[in-house]
Image (tube, rainbow, N blue to C red; front, side):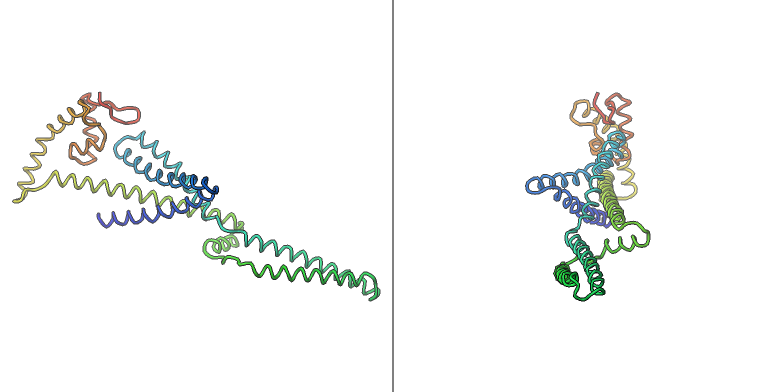
Length: 306
């Protein structure tokens, strides 16, 4: 149990930090200056709200408050979609300026080559008539100028440091070649898949961590309620069990009195702690309270004192 708890906490920490980083990058890049800080705060708040809502939804679901659980699950779904969008956008966000400039230079060089070929063709035609034709010398000058321009562009192109195409970009390129889809589309699909996987891990470890914590609390409560005397034996355990069964009606009556006097709010956790019982038995106590007209259940599934 303890080893599983450590695994859940480690998994939650790693996945939560990864999701928080990607969402922060996305929201921070939406603006500049103080406004960027505001967007960053919104992104961090949405990440924290995502974990809070899923834990609350799971708790209400286990407590039998289905309607409240559905509402919180809806909030969780919205915040998860925001987180997926932010993570995917951050994964796709790369510095495209060097690549764009490199492509532009290649296009300009190709245009110059085309112009050089045209001038060479014109010069050949003029020379075939007469080497001293008036069109030959201007064509040569134009070709020299174009070649100088091309040399300058080639030098500028060599000075551009293009980022190495590796990781997701390289994989997207290979998939694009195999499937016939554009590389940009493949990159978008891959980013969304990775973002969804990350959010799935975040929610899985959040729920698992909450469940492990809740189970540990139940084990402690049960152990405290079934402690064996120092000379412990099976007879001692039976005596404790019999005493607990004898005192259970007294506990229930004390619970009824506490609720009616407004000293205790009839929530799932309060009832469980007051009665010192496992979470699975609280539902039975709730039904007894409703049958005795001590509480009524609201439309949201919450118990209210009569």
